[in-house]
Image 1 (cartoon, rainbow, N blue to C red):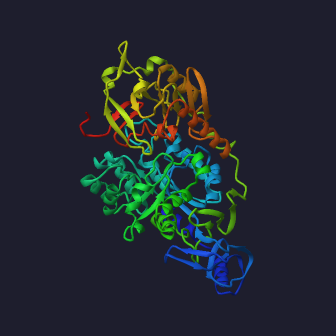
Image 2 (cartoon, rainbow, N blue to C red):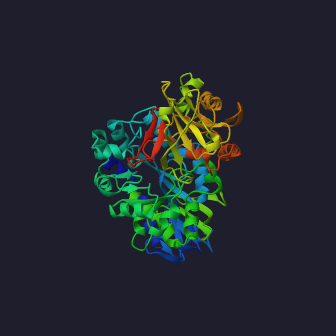
Amino acid sequence: MTRDAVHRESVVEPLEMWRRRLAVAQRQAPADLVVRGGTVVNVHSGELLRRDVAIIDGRIAAIGEGYEGRQTIDATGMLVAPSFIDGHVHVESALVWVSEFARAVVPRGTGAVVTDPHEIANVAGLAGMAALRDAARDLPMRFAFTVPSCVPASAAESPGVTLGPDVVAEALAWPEVVGLGEMMDFPGLLAGNADIAAKLTSAAGLRRDGHAPGLGGDALQAYAGAGPTSDHESTSVEEARDKLRAGLMLMIREGSTEQNLHDLLPLVTDATYPRACFASDDRDCHTLLHRGHIDDILRQAIAAGLDPVRAIRMATWNTADYWRLDGIGAVAPGYHANLVLISDLAAVTVAATLYQGDVVAEDGRMVVPLPTPADAAPGLRETVRVAPLTTRDLRLAPEDARLAVQVTPGQIVTTAIAVEPLVIDGWVRADPSRDLLKLVSVERHHATGRVGVGLVRGFGLRSGALASTIAHDAHNIVAVGTNETDLLGAIALVAESQGGLAVVADGRILGHLPLPIAGLLSDGPLAEVAAGYAELEAAARVLGSPLDSPFGLLAFMSLSVIPEIRVTDRGTLVLTDRPID
């Protein structure tokens, strides 16, 4: 069966349902449900309209007044809007299993996400992607998938599995798939890599997500002309404007670690807003539970002066239209009744979330059951395989330590800086007095014993070490610390627990969060995992880190496609041609 045939089959509606909707719209039969007395946010016309919404068989039959229904919801004083859509997210970054991700975001008004499962794909390949897909299938929100295009992100990383063009082509035929995932290996694309060309060709007729941090000029023209149609990596208005001019859909990102909303909002005007939407990219469970998801992005955008109706359109219709998510993203006849009732527009307070005509969340909590994650993904455990390590493996020669990673709070881009390292007995040591710490990446999929060691400034630890098996995108072990003993202890702890996050100081464990599913996800409940994550972040700050999210930023220190400098298991990688003084 062709991909087009799968898509057509998935949208076929039984004749009797079609006829029932016709009858309800023409007032010849009662609706299943009428949402009465609310103000509809019409994302097509840009209006706020006092209308009732008549629903039958999970779809909207009509918008009007006086419709009869077997059940009614009193929405007086509330806005009735489409449920929110995240244009680009890695659900694995929540640190919880997919059912607990739904528990976090559905009560916040999220009705759909476009997720790129390249985190779990780097660990477990197609089997990992299929496990996420299968677990998401019956949840009360829509999960649309993109197929990871870059596993690994580049040749400088060492994943558990490599996804070649044939595997990508196979996954592109899944009915849940709406496009090719973010094309992160822009150097490979610009060099005309044959495998990249094959993946782009396999995705013909689908959207191809982009990922081009800092790209401009002729390189941006070449990148946009090669197939990618969107980008979520802009950090300045100038960069974002260039990408809009090149025809790319602008996804304004606001995650736990990557925060670009306020820098990019000035670009959203009457002329540009139809080509802009919102994306969270990476939001951890604590952020989702306590600050929110797309509702939090909307709240910030509206507070910064963006017109509320325009903001809601950017969080719904614009995203659905770009990704061709037929039947969602608007409150209009024929659309799925995926709705949010908003009691306070400025605060984006979600009173209730409906999915296909059923109330699934009210007053900040789910009102329908969700699967528990305790027994989830049995085939995705026991994935951490590390060769024996000693402190000797964490040594760094002076000639390899002339450059260091300078982190940028609130961003995942880094700066390469020249440093004079502290050398003792012929080897480089961390120097907490200058905030010059060791940054380590350990290959953890095939027990190769490969270890990359470099220097980093900006984590601010005065003692101890942090370690994590979340290290975008290959997800080897990444650690930062003030001494080799605590570094080794933290690395050993997350390896022995088959994945997790750890804080160690003076040989003592100050915090540990196991992540047994692929070394990326907990099998615990949302609230428990969020509390554990918050305690770990707090422990890192007790050791001196000034960062809002030390572990969130640590996870990006090995990502080989983000400028300017990284440390992977293969060593320090410099991603800039500029002179470094």
